[in-house]
Length: 107
Image (cartoon, rainbow, N blue to C red; front, top):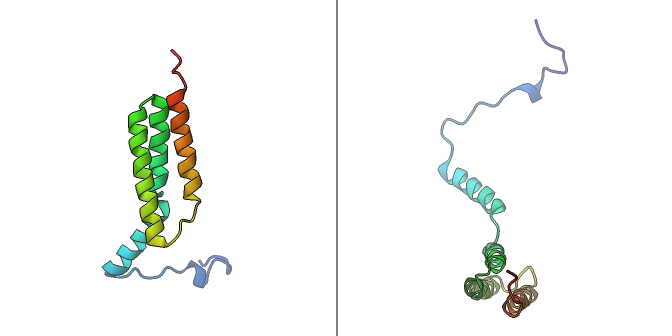
């Protein structure tokens, strides 16, 4: 017994799988998918910076701020310019650290 005519057709047929996928093509596809899910290094450093500030580890926060500045400078040099305004971000992080250093910790 055949199904309804709207079920039968080209759209319901399955293509035969390739016997051996091209490794280079597969690697290129996996790399492109992986890149789309990765965050920028500077985004991850900012997260760690915020965590260090919240936990009161200001020396680590300062080291992370230096790492952020280095990563930003390298990214700007490689791409010619940054997609986001990195100067504003660095200024905001510096202000956050300065505020944390001057604000007494509540017990």
